[in-house]
Amino acid sequence: GVAIFGTTPFGVRCVSVLAGLGTVLAVMVLARRLGGNGAALWASLIAACLPFAGAGFVVATPDAPLLLTTALTLVAVDRALEAPARSRDALTWWVISGACLGASFASKYTSVLLPLGVLIAFLISRPLRERLATPGPYVAVAVALVIFAPVLAWNAHHGWISFTFQLHHGLGAPTGHTVQHELELLGGQLALASPVLFVLMAIAVARTLRDAPADETPRGERRYLLAVVAAVMFLFFVGSALDKRVEANWPAIAYVPATVLLALVADRGRWRVWTSAGCVLGAIMVAVIYVHALVPILPFPSGKDPIGQAYGWTSLAASVDTAQSEIQPSAGVNTWVAGDRYQDAAELAFHLPEHPTVFSLNLNSRQNQYALWPGFTRAARPGDNLVVVLTPPEGGEGGRSPVVEALIPHFESVRRGSLVALGRGDDVRSRRRVWMFEGWRGSWPATAISH
Image 1 (cartoon, one colour):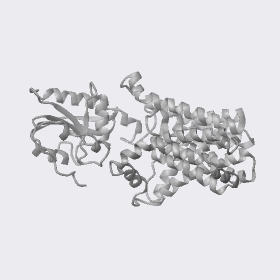
Image 2 (image 1 turned 60 degrees about the vertical axis):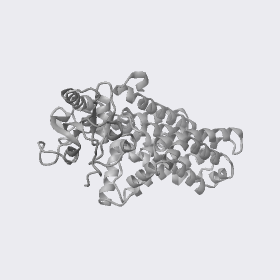
Image 3 (image 1 turned 120 degrees about the vertical axis):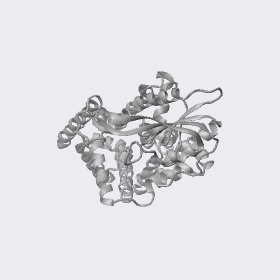
Image 4 (image 1 turned 90 degrees about the horizontal axis):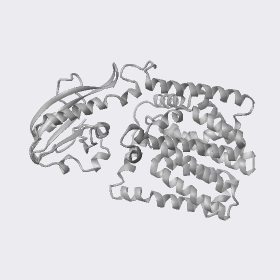
């Protein structure tokens, strides 16, 4: 995206938007295959009116390629199930499904729930179980693993660090209260899918699980597979919420098959009335989100507006640029830029002129990808300078943070720079202080600051 449109917000987000478009088209294709043109139309309407799709695809996150590749995988699996079990057509579509699944693995690790759901559907459905006696599913898994192999190889050379992190992040030691976690999960889904559409999709999945086994037609088997996949995906996060907080967007993968199942019944009797109402409510929610992005209209508590986190970074980058210019340049001496949080480092690298290398020191924050990349101590030379952006300490913005105290012994001098508010208008989400460290002595804090 940025190669074509430049390092701009549109350049960053355009591929995510295209992935969203592809997801909707794939969902329409799947609905049309199982329910005809009417179902395809309903699928497009439902998908467009889901807040997480209508507004979420504007944000560049791994969820965009995850949902696209999930939808494409399900389309390919559906084509494979429609073809004769041991035919060349079936094998071809299994290969395609494996390629899409491998891309899904490379998008986000929660995609492992997709083949798990398919396997469970195969095991509990007699007609589907017969497919396990054919080479197609195993070829698909092999193709997916080949595509995913670079990620596996990288992890093998780094102590399986990203797998360990994600397992701890989602399935680590229990924290907080179970009831609160489950209520937060439910509230997040009501916001991301809209209350009416969320309930309707849940009912559509449940009824398909109940009724589809009695429908021994090929379409009945394929609908049943979608229902099992949706249920496995969502119930996994319900179970995870028993121990730890689940982010609202994590179960979004389940809405791909659930949208199709709702579209298949949306034109029947009361389903039509309620689905129409759900689409209207969802469309209003999407419209409000877009309006709020332009003009704040929602009554978020001070500092809690999620859209506000996109504001203030240009001003912070300007302050950092000014701080760099205030340091007297010397021959052969470089002035580097860093934050202590990966979010700050990434925003500065994007908004600073010429998009320079920006480090995340990770002295008082959790470890992240920046810890695996060359840091300041590998790039800099003794005598170099460092401009650091830090969150002011609690209890006073004039004090020095623990990071400043840790860095002072390793530089000849330190100066306090400007204080910048991050947020939209009067809604300040947080503040950052700019610090200027001059004359690096070549040493560094031995360990990260303990919490």
